[in-house]
Amino acid sequence: MGQTLKYACIDPKSGDVELENLSDDRTYWCSLNSTQPGGDYSCTSEPTPDDEVNISSLGTAPSPCACGTLFTIGTPHCTYDCVAAD
Image (cartoon, rainbow, N blue to C red; front, side, top):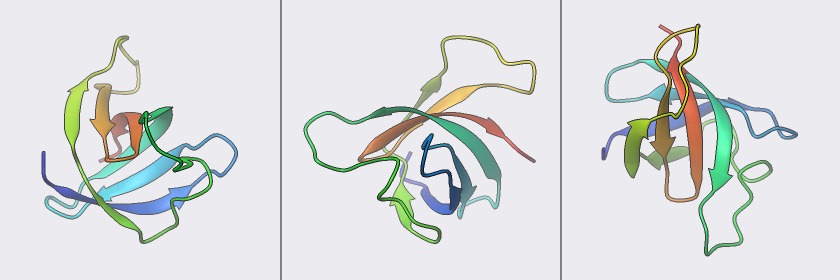
């Protein structure tokens, strides 16, 4: 936690994103899981490429993925289910 992520690209319809971890140069492919409660932020329309955000929580996703280890990344506004792309 506390590492900085940069949005590389965002699908404005699904909220799926590619995130770059600026701490270790890893890339994550992520599906939008949810928008954090208590705010007006839209995880599908508000993130833009090159926006930076800190990881506020990490966890394991509820189901295994054949494409790699699935994990969750929480940001102040959004939660994503991700796999490491590299």
